[in-house]
Picture 1 (cartoon, one colour):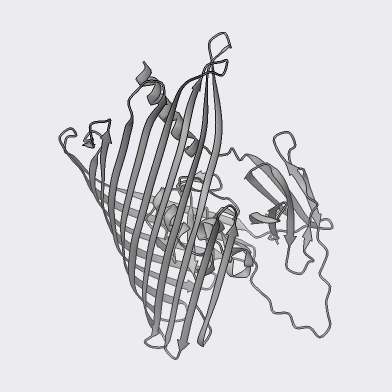
Picture 2 (picture 1 turned 30 degrees about the horizontal axis):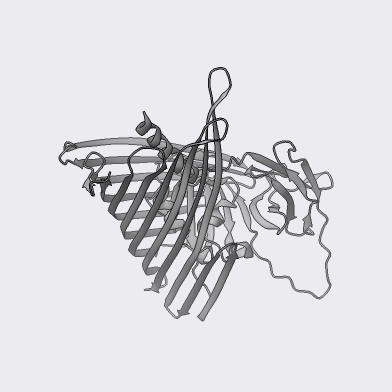
Length: 546
């Protein structure tokens, strides 16, 4: 029983590192000018005492904006709208006992100055049929932050500790970069987004009702991240840096260079994210018997320190072969190194406070990511209303993860245990696609086809040491091979009137895959294959109120 007890203690000792605060608070505001609701107003939710930006969104057709998943604290809204004066509300507390009030803001028209030329800028958030467009270039809030941090501030977007994205509360979001699927999810996707600088991003499109040209997998919607490309002639560049100071310093830096002349346009970007972080948690658990009397307590102090370095490089070149045809080449690369060291203890106490046993756990993890990609493309305009695009892309990922856990008994009886793992992985994605679009008066038509081949090779090797030296743990080790092939075709049509927009489309997908679990001395070798096809219709009707 004592060994089982210490195993339970080990589980408890690791639990604080997985703890996460329950963020369930909500705050809302309604924006008006007199009796008139103001849709598409930009609403920033900021937190005191430093006015840090928490969320940013836009008002709907009724002039309302609502934010959820908020931690306790003191907040205020900052509201702006083209043609109106910017307004900041009074601060308000938010906690379990004090829900946030439903605030109302009355914006007043901005004053006009004679002889002043005003240069219009795109609004930070634009509401369009079936999607929300966030223009990161129009706001300074993205400078010095990662794409993951920028996404967490956007309306309807949430990112949990495991890297899972949700759009309007629905998980299973597909992430695209420059209109091309990333084919990543979970921790792998989070690693990619944390390594991308928001300063290199032009727009983020949020599509909760994606049209037929996007893959049907996931079902929650699409987030399309569009990188910057210059339209200015000659040579230009920009540098940005951001520093966050807590116990340790974190820095986010980016450099963008662009050159455009005659038929050539070249863009390059480099970003470096570096920093240290820590987590400290004190937990106390009390266990009761059936009569409600305490029988034992577990006190769990824990601390984790980590380091992160991410280098991200991208480059693309466009060549105008003629007035109607252009070619492009793109390349990207990412190098990430992340380490963390943790130690915690679980002190098992009697109801009176006397210590019964103490378990100490030390952990070390190291992650290394290397990925690179190449892309080739062609764009041809048959006329101003008919266009063809062809893309060929390849992406390669190499991942290496190492973990070490040591579990030692300081007080009490039991055996010291240690575990370590080595987890190399590889991912290759090849894809080809062609899209054709045509415009006829108020109608837009699109059709296209796509093929993708995905291959993964993931292995995890576990070892354990219970006092007699390191031994292979074949029962937990595994080696998994997977290949997937996807062929798809789609067609869609859109009619846009003065106020109404109607979209409809149909997508066909055929998928086949082969999977194999390699065996060892304990685990048997196994394999399976499957092929299937599906049709996915889409329909959207929207009305522009203002």
